[in-house]
Amino acid sequence: MALIPSQILRVAILLSYFSILCNYKAIDMPAHQTYGGSWKFLTFIDLVIQAVFFGVCVLTDLSSLLTKGSANMEQERQLRKLIGLRDWIMAVLAFPVGVRSGLPKTSGQLYTSVAKSWHDVKIVGVSNCQFHSGGTKL
Image: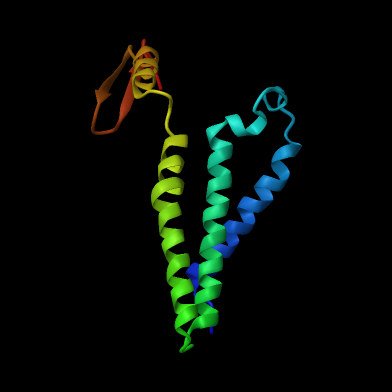
């Protein structure tokens, strides 16, 4: 019953998420004292969802290690349910919220701000990647 590297990695990720959640309240932000507190931020909600997901992953790994080689059909059925729960959390909560919490509000705002700040930059030498902005070499 040796642990494989992916199982060790899942435990390490779970511990890091829990340490971040425990130390999150040490950050004193005025927005945390208003209505909703930390729960109004998608990044905090994503942090909690990811911690729960990796907790279920570690529980699945431990359960599969303990039931390996067992002939008990009830344990195998419970393990399949746990794997189904893990896959559901990943597909419905962890992945969509994790992807969305890292994106800007609208991609149009991002492109507009980049275009405004770099409108006078022109490429003068593609082979050696020299950029000039208003006569100043960047």
